[in-house]
Length: 291
Ligand code: SAM
Image 1 (cartoon, rainbow, N blue to C red):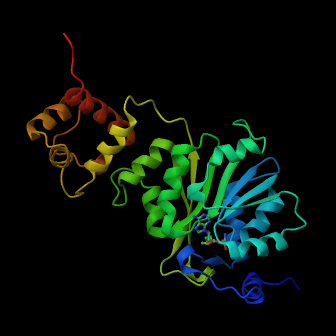
Image 2 (spheres, protein in one colour; image 1 turned 45 degrees about the vertical axis):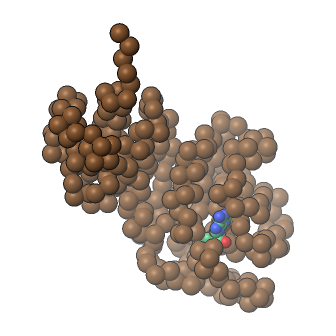
Image 3 (cartoon, rainbow, N blue to C red; image 1 turned 135 degrees about the vertical axis):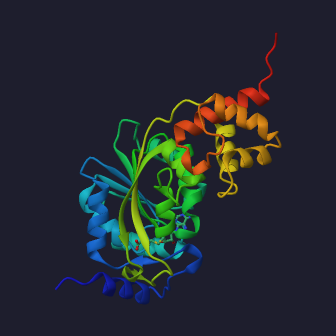
């Protein structure tokens, strides 16, 4: 009979004298059905290059290797490297990098492997929860080669990453996701399918990358969105007026000129609206017109 994932996880941990490390967010998946659903959701096929962040003991990696062209896995924990190398020693399509994903130049690594923007490249990962947002922000800002992300995140975070306007979860991070990708909530995952179980439930999301709309001043747009959500109960006019130390009447006039109600809150504005407003605001306040 085939060994269960639970047994495999116990066996690999004890035979290698390992314990799940909290500091690296190690919660191992031990449910074959959930892994199957993740791989189905990721839509990988024999032409796909998969980047896996945090392969751990390789539970998800196994399935990804069966379905894809190759798996490039980034693992920070030195003690897992020999275990993974042994587990996948017969797999020529497994490329293991003992590296912190936050200190990696993904596109350079991909190019060094001969990959180009034309190749189907996706990320599939059960992310370490303590750094979900930094990882996503870094990859979405830096990489132009990744087509799609299929990710496990904490349930609450997954809701925010994929939230639409006028929902309680919609925040600055949601706007950023809609700016860079088409985000979608896939399914909820019980905390009981992990070893050790985390404190909260999780969920799978997908992010399909897209060419972001052109923005004159992207840094200002991102800052504007942050400040707009500073105090969620307040109107956008109040947050922006306080955030940039600008008279509220001026902010109201600008909102009206751009076709927004003066009492609108940040949660009612989609990414297009934010781009429009931040550009208008930047031009009015900071760009001096020479005569
Ligand atoms: N993929 C495995 C699974 O599903 O059972 C393990 C997932 S576990 C939630 C997260 C993994 O990410 C761990 O293996 C951990 O060591 C690794 N990790 C944590 N921080 C990392 C980092 N900065 N760069 C690369 N891997 C990291």
